[in-house]
Image 1 (cartoon, helix red, strand yellow):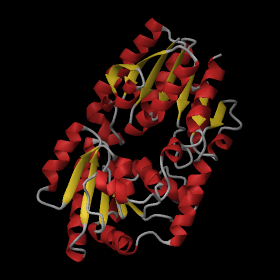
Image 2 (cartoon, one colour; image 1 turned 180 degrees about the vertical axis):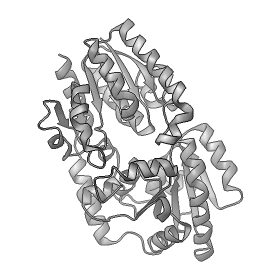
Image 3 (tube, helix red, strand yellow; image 1 turned 180 degrees about the horizontal axis):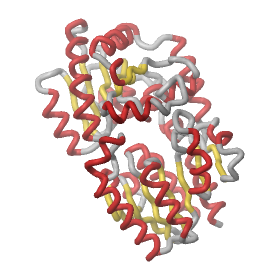
Image 4 (cartoon, helix red, strand yellow; image 1 turned 60 degrees about the vertical axis):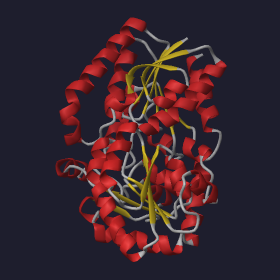
Length: 370
């Protein structure tokens, strides 16, 4: 069996890779498509590297649009020429869903993992998405109900992160592995997995770190770099600060940290599932922000807050993401650690998303294709 695949973000690579491995244990299969390193490790032949798709925001996409359109055009030609038994995509809906439409037009089943964030903005997309897909695998228990009246087969599989993360682990072993001090406070700093995010957010995060070091002199920072290129970029930006940069290891960084400062996104959920007090801060192109803000349909931007239906973690977006606001939010976390209320709510989220996610997803895919 030949299956074409496409993931456009680090999180998509992490989610899809174990699912592909499990499917291949059930049926003989060859994978090819747009793949990250973990998908390649799971046996996918990369027609295009995933990082060519890793760009976020309307204005940020524009300089890369010709390349993105070219890649999608070549993927469409590949689907028509190879006619695989299925197309499985993950994340990056603006790129992947039109690819799914093309697959369906060729009679190729289109399977997408991770529902677009219709819970947060542009709910009018739901009926359109339903027509673009044959099967949608959702990570959150409330999502299938959103598609209930569309006729789309939609299944809740749980979130892979909950299956891969230990809740509230002892940080000692993680600090030893990352060569971090065992007793001093450690701030995990995650400015994003895209170059544009790092260039925009890391100066802000480092300015907040400098202020925090002035108040907590023994504070140490640690930053996971998603790629080798980002590692070099981040190293060039930290100068002589007491900040350690590591290759990847974002989950280990969170587990080793006293508190975490990060870009709003999947990492915010990952940090909360680890039981670490977290501050989410994000800034984007002003024009992108104006377009997105006008279409938001929820009080909260971050997934942990939406799932908890309360401000479980501070979310500082656009103008609210200032050095003063970040320092004010994260300083008590570094001194006092997580509150009992935070740990109780974080554990509820962890339990609601747990389960054998990889098996559920693989079983749903194999059953559909058979």
